[in-house]
Amino acid sequence: QVQLQESGGGLLQAGGSLRLSCVASGGTLSSYAMGWFRQAPGKEREFVATISWAGGTTYYGDSVKGRFTISRDNAKNTLYLQMNSLKPDDTADYYCAAASRMYGPTRLINHYAYWGQGTQVTVSS
Image (cartoon, rainbow, N blue to C red; front, side):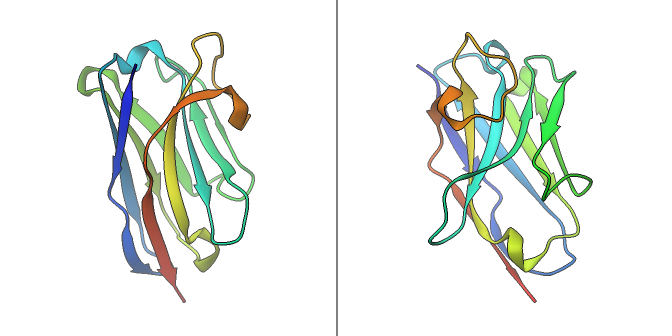
């Protein structure tokens, strides 16, 4: 069973950039399609981005397309989310997740079997 740990969150001003990392342990990252989700206070968890096993296929949520980039380094068992041009609306807890092995890159939250604890991102105006 894979365990996931996010890092890299913080407080920054609008327009800034941040890179989140997610390290996997207890399993091989390359065995899973991976995703990033976020949850703002009082809102449902929202799809951000997903990436295929080898990184050749990516999909993004409409609100982050063109600003965020998902990537992975399977040799380091690490998933990344580069976030640029951040806005106050990006404020949320960000979670990485590993999809069930029967699925490729997917937007659907119920396709993900393993979740990290989350890292907080706060963007001030």
